[in-house]
Structure formats: structure tokens, C-alpha cells
Amino acid sequence: MLCCLALPLSAAPLRLQLQQQDAQLLFRYQFDIAGAPQQLAFNIDNASLNNHFRQFRAFKAALLQQYLWRDLRAHVARYPTAKLSRLPGNTVLRYRLQAPTELAAQLDSELQQLLQQQTDAYLQREYYYQLGLPWGEQVIVPDHQRLMQDSLTALLPVANALHPKLVNMTLRQSLAYISHWLQQIPYQDLSDRQRSAGASFSPPLKLLQENRGDCDSKTVLLAALIRMLLPDVKLAIIYLPQHAMLAAHLPLQADDSSVTLDGREYLLLDPTGPALLAPGQISPEYRIYTHNAQFAYRLL
Image (cartoon, helix red, strand yellow):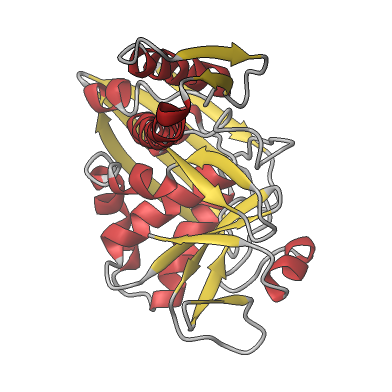
């Protein structure tokens, strides 16, 4: 099987050729950086491609509520004098507890503890995370930290192919090279980042195979590659309204866009594209949020 894709971007079009070779898929890229033609090639096992976060799917609040309701009913069934009835609503589980006065407070506390415990367990199992936003809202997002960490082994062929390209480069040049490659992979748009609940998130191998990805998908892939190739660089994922990007704890230069996390300055990196933004450059529409600390973050 041979598949060629060529899409116009802000620089010269990136070209991806996919070729099946026995039990592996060959990825062969041609793209430009600063007008200089580049090539990158690597093989990934079909088994890795087929099994890479195969169970990951968009988060559905109604499904979580069904699981929680089942567990609450089972718990209350242990108390013959108590009764639990469900109230309307799918996104938030609402219920009415009827129990003798001497039991009601204890049982209500047990149910609240069970709700939190089972919610955490469900999100952990499904690779999701409850993120607190600076304006007080709680949202469910893919657990980008775990998705990055659990992708490292699968991405080893990609890191091995990039390593000789970066060996004679400075740290900033290395970050720019990886970012510019990812920025030229076609962007998959999504209108509501915070409420999408992972609907368009692509784990790294899926992103590469489909040759498209949204901002947090590309950010996770960039973070994983930096973690393998530049393991001493401290990283964080930055959550802005409708957007996500990476931050790296590196020395800053004049005019760099940066954020302060736990008292340290982090350089901003946006692999989304199609604009070929160098390390320390972000789109003007996002600077107001980073400048005013209107973002959430997780250290990686």
C-alpha cells in the first residue's frame, strides 16, 4: 500500500508518503525549514499502530453518571431503611436520599466519598483528567500527562530518526526543528477546546498515521519527543481558552513569550501551525491570556 499526501501550508507543502513494509509502516516526510528541504523517515510496527490507545474515546458525562448511579444504588442497598431516588439530569448526577435521621448524615457522607472515589477511578481508567481553570470552572480534558508518558516507547522510532538531525544543533535550534515539522502537519480544527471532552484528540501514533491533529494532540507529541531527545528540559502544558501549547524551562531571549510557573520562567512553544512559529513566539490572540496569567497548566 502506498499513500501520498500533499497539502498547502504557510511554508512549502509538507509531503507524507506511507508505505507498508511487511509488519511495519514506513513514514517518509519531505518538508522545508527556512527554505531548506528536509527529509525524515521512520518505521513503526503495525501492532503498535493498531493498539496505540485503542480504547481512547471522547468523554461522555452521561455514561459516567450511569456508572456512578449503579455504584450509589449498590451502596445504599446495604441499608434496608434507606431509599435513593434519581433526579433528572445527565451531565451531573442528582439524587434524593431518604433515611432515618440517625443514619442520613453518615450515609450522605459515604455517598459523597464514593462519588469522588469512583469518578477519579473512571477518569484514570479512561485517560481523562479534571482540570481546574483560573476562573473557577472545572472541565474534563484528556490526561495529556499520562498520554505523553505512555507514548514514549511507541515513539522511539521517531525519536531515533530525529536524533541525527539534531546532534549538531543548539537546544533552541532542536526545539525549532521539531516544532516546525509538527506545525506543517495539517491542523484539525475544533471549535470549543474546553468542552470538547477529547472529541478530536489524537494520541501521537494516530496523529502521525492520519497526518492531522489539533493543538493539544500536537502538543502531547512535541512533549513526548522533547522528553526523549532532551530529557533534562522541564516541561508543562498550558491551557488557554480554546487552545493548548507547551512550555519549556529554558533561558529566555529578548521578546520571548513566556509564563511563570511555580516561580520559574518557561519559554512558550506552539506546535499547532500552520504558521511556523519559532520557540518563544505565539500568536498575538493568545498573548493577552499568557500576559495576564489567564491560563491553567500541568507540569509534565
